[in-house]
Image (cartoon, each protein chain N blue to C red):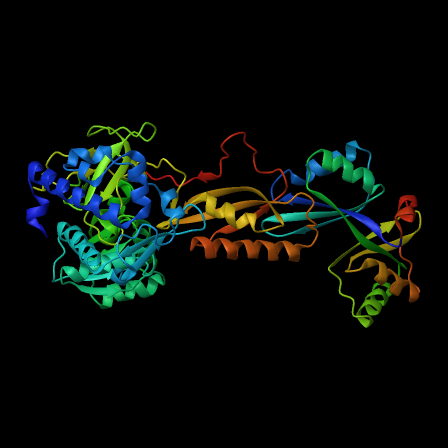
Length: 433
Length: 145
């Protein structure tokens, strides 16, 4: 089943022609409207007229997350604010979030790409779609919501939390489709079992799971314990949110909506393009976007790409599940976390040293984060009450910065290993198999 | 001054944390007068009254142990019922809060001592002495056996 057969099964020549035309138009728009891009193009000696076909894409400079931070919050918007109708955001490397502005057409586009995603998984207007991604600045909730509305399904916007209530809604409302993180799907399954219930007590036929890495084993476990078919979805706030790439029944990688998000794979060190099948850093150009199109945006995700047509009939290029990152970003319970954000919190707290270590574990289905923080040399730690207050204060500051909770463990001076050169800040003990 | 220097050590709540500290002190010939542990699920604070706090602090610091010297009161108690109550009554009557307390005995003096952590130990010592209580200073502590 296709949502947009024409775009999803287009020949390679047609796709390349479409991408080339959109790229040329996008380059012109950002050159004229985004001073940061004009500066980049001028520095590289490129004029908008130089970009005529999709092959010219390699002439363009890359865009990275640091430039988004430098131009925070609206510096990359390519239209006046009066045309921006929505803001979404996700964590950046510093205290500043990555902010994305959508025009009315961008929201329509979001609905379109999410409709393709849901249709590929068999969802139709007949379905009742339970969205338990978080609603808010995070793109998960509203992204799934807009896709479900676009296909004309019945949306149940539950958002996160209160798992027993979620299960009651799944049962009472007869939801046939669920959208959440894969780890939360497993947690729902665990809770269901604890309540003495099983897949026969709910009506789910399928689920769209994303926002964090997951494995084939997790897919089988989710499918078995919830009695549904599980589809992977991929997206990032900087592009649009969920809907950048999606899975079909062939499970042969994720189809990139490449008429809107042109993918490339590059060598992260030399920045040279890599051929199909060679792992490298994923780069996207969001050429259809109006509010904040980005050219050659470096995602930091490592994966491969193939342009071979798929068994499902789609010709859209397919990306493999990201197999890692070229930076130190962690994804914890679907939330992007950069160690540098934690460092920034600790720098504001006088009682501690700048040394810290993050431990990430998966307890049952859920991720936990423990942060070891070293006391400052000479800090008068003699009162338990003060230490507990300190620990609580750090916990509060971390939570308000990251948006997720962490356990804080105060440790003696010198406990955390000092490293020469690049400090190691993360021990990720989640064993995703 | 009528207070003694307590040695506090911050340790992780894990096996071997205590022995590391006691070995360092034993090797340096430090005599422990009193010892107390405050613990939470995450960390512990060892609090010690020793014959020579300066040496103890130096030895521990050199071994990169997280240590801090804290002034506390060591109040002499007669070894009989009601002695502790007398101290607490004086403190309560003067609205003085106690952060923590622990006790030890001295063989040579035949007395018991209660160690008190209070805010402003200097002025609290004066209040206690005005009420007929004996409060140890660092020099007297050294002489205790």
